Image (cartoon, rainbow, N blue to C red; front, top):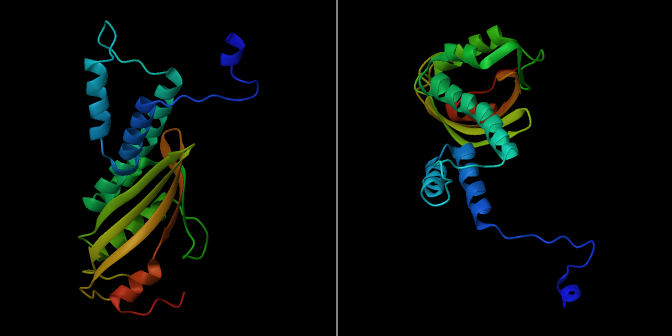
Length: 208
């Protein structure tokens, strides 16, 4: 009887854990979209049903460390988008960028640029599109990197290089990879629809 109930050697058995699945979905919703209601609901459930005698809720240390590490990377990026892009506080970038920061844009010749050059470019873009709003559609943390997929809505109200204001509205998609060192962004790689931007403005892209 016992032999018949024993699983065969070499076969791994897996247990369906609804609580783990619910937690993973809630955490994923927070990291990607900032939606915290799922995590709050789980916290309330834990405190009312599954808490210990001291009222606490314990999770494995490894899980706790991983959650803390990911949130420590995701939160600055979410704050960076809100402050720098949506509120026009370009100087906020200095709090997020670390020493030796490098910015990569494959559409610009000359290789990566430093923090000061990035700030000048960002300020110029903000002046050209002073009402810009950026919505984060995905925010994914893995290892020392965070990937942000976002959508920008703005109106061309100021000079953009040699392009005079057109008053046209633009909608631009972008994807940026951020690499972290010591809690700050050390490097980033950005890809956005620059050709689509020129087309929406009704102008020809620069020759170089």
